[in-house]
Length: 48
Image (cartoon, rainbow, N blue to C red; front, side):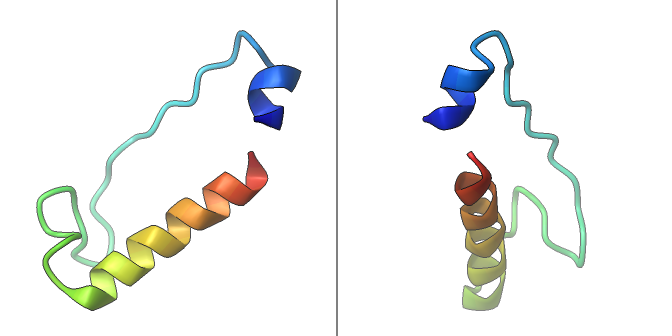
């Protein structure tokens, strides 16, 4: 991964929050929330 190569001492920290009634206990319970969370994850992975 480029990010790890460019910034070897950096650590990626993920802060869990609730937004639009999606949280760590509910994001996987319906397809719309799964799609939204996976979309955000894909945006993050494209940056790295």
